Image: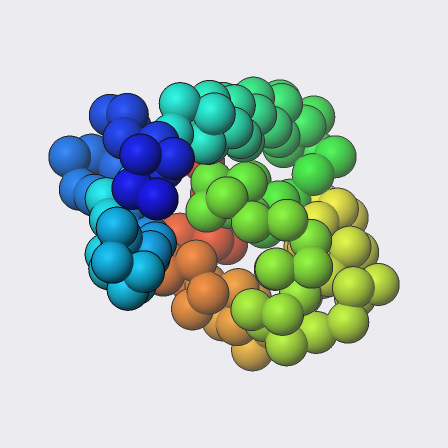
Length: 131
């Protein structure tokens, strides 16, 4: 079975190896290193998409449309459900916080939940400078 598992190098793993379990010639399960160019392509595509979203968000922040929360969401490679789960709030609330006009009204207690999730200081979040 080991012959059927891709053994290609994967640049997205930074030299580390991913392990799968497969049956060997004796019919027993054993660990096999795994590498796939398809998986690498998908990962690189997703990472590049988040970089594009980050850049678009910076432009929206400059225009006072989007909030720094949206930027850090993309920077940390999160989508809306992941962000909601991370801060423990409903989606409709978090969606509002992604807009600058609502972000400016948030109190420190709510902002602290976001800064904890993003592993940044409250000051960094409140005084975000996209220059």
